[in-house]
Image (cartoon, rainbow, N blue to C red):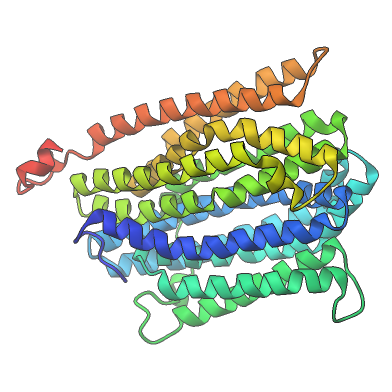
Length: 459
């Protein structure tokens, strides 16, 4: 466990971001390797897996709902030096996560075929998506306990061993996916189902490893069976913070499904191009996501300790690092989008659709990164409603014009991407305004702590 209320605040953000970046680097490698091998199966396979992969956004919405609240409350409790409360929050989040994951798995497994048939451009794409989801949904269920344990560790600032565990599971996934897909050893190629089975095995091993890590004698927070009886008050406190944060990812999943619905008339090549482009963008964003994830716990511990200047310092550090990363990625997507796409699929139409998507959408990378970091700051302070409000605003601004334009003669896909850039720009402006207001309202601790140094009262 690390006390992040002392020492240079930027150093804590860099240290945590470094560990998280290590795991996200391997996560990026997995995404790209998976995309590369699936691309060898044809554009229908790429479109089907990409379509099925949008379910991941729904899982992210649910796991963020559970994980963000747990991370924030654990960090704040440790900032107050209340380890018993931190442990209670962890055990309650574990119970809530397992219950939620079970319900999700049962419901979505029964709806998987209808989902693919509704959004796929053709029957072949739908069939590929269904084969993938048969095994991917059980893997998604295991994400729930995994996220609960990871949330507590982030709140503690403990990332070294968990990062190594995650890297190990990703390496296993990278090795297993093509082996099962093409039947390199077994002689029985499983196609897109093989990559989903690889994910299931890797996530299962990750759950086992983290369970053993919490079970060690020196663990500061442990599993406590006597704390597994549901406590509605604790659940409410976690969900009050987590639901708006999860709502952001829910809105993101709605956005992705809207795009698939809008571009469906352009065929499987358009869906494959968008799917590859979106997967590439997701991979490219992982360093910024690491920075944002690192900023939240630092903010949480210092907010719990009532150190307002350090909260602001954490935001400034995260924003600066994110900006550098995103400017570099923007340049990359303008210089060589076609080259990035051809690595995964050489179909000219797929490359054309995907490169156009990357070139236009990359104009909002800088603002997107700052939105990620500011949302993490809101999470650390325990108020995620502003981020949810700006995400909802972005969806409305995107959806209405996009659907109107899609009905008009001469409609082209680049119109959709341009509207998306405008929506993110407005989201960024509103997010920064709300963050500034939140700092003024909640970081003046002088009224509640008469011993607060003057520098904090002025911050």
